[in-house]
Length: 144
Length: 144
DNA sequence: TATTAATAATTAATATATTAACTAAAGTAA
DNA sequence: TTACTTTAGTTAATATATTAATTATTAATA
Image 1 (cartoon, each protein chain N blue to C red):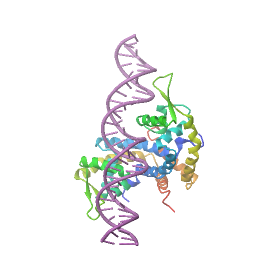
Image 2: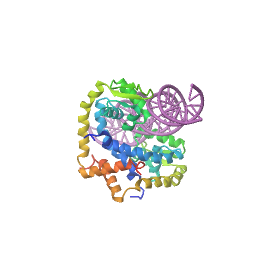
Image 3: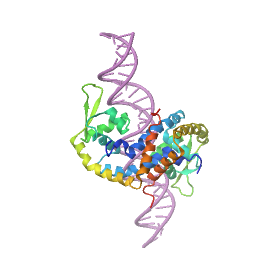
Image 4: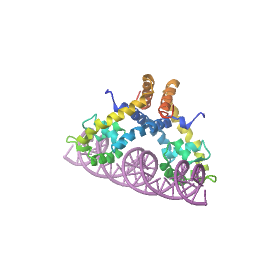
């Protein structure tokens, strides 16, 4: 194992972890004709009745230029709608339609099941360390 | 904090970690007119003189349909070349040109510097736990 | 050997990411 | 109020991801 082994570098380890777990979830999303990104948006809307595009971009980690098209397609699928703010006409809220809200009860149990499967082989301590480590990585520039 | 907090889910934590560290590297790649994926291919070619597209796809985690275009662009930039196998005409090897090999000495020091910065705030033990955790995630289906 | 099955790479269609530039609305200060 | 600046969202151009289908070649089997 070389001193600098590309396949063991942090970025590649992160990618490989995602490559392992995402297909499990995408399977479910496809059953509901959702892409992963569309799912992320709905997932956030189930926790927030009304949210601006900017904040939606932050919470889903979807870059705003991408968000435009993804939101368009979710609107076409009748799952969400746009709503321009009255107080600041620059801002646009996104809201789930009834159909969009109804998806939660159908999709979440399936997703939670997979999530539990992924977590299962880890001890509570191991899992905590993993999440803490990732959290520390994602705050590298923010702390002191 | 809800029982199921989307922003603390493993996939989002992984995405956030990547979102934090990748821009640091991409800065460097852009200086050399490389995309991140082009970099990954070169990075692997610096460790392997000659490699098939299939194996390159495995090592870079770039799906093979994407690989076709990325390789095309690297060839156009005179950094690599294709070479069809004589023993099995289905296989195509990819090889770095001299110009491609020369990039290593220019780019690697810069990349290593950033990598060290990222690692720096972690203790050796913390880092090891993080890598181990990620490794375990990426082998979920492979073990026993 | 002729047929069939498997493999490596590619193509096609659609969705998303990246970067820069742009528009409209709001804030700010002379 | 006018000019300058910032902010929220969008558009545009190019690169990559995802999924399914396709081609060329090789392997396998009757």
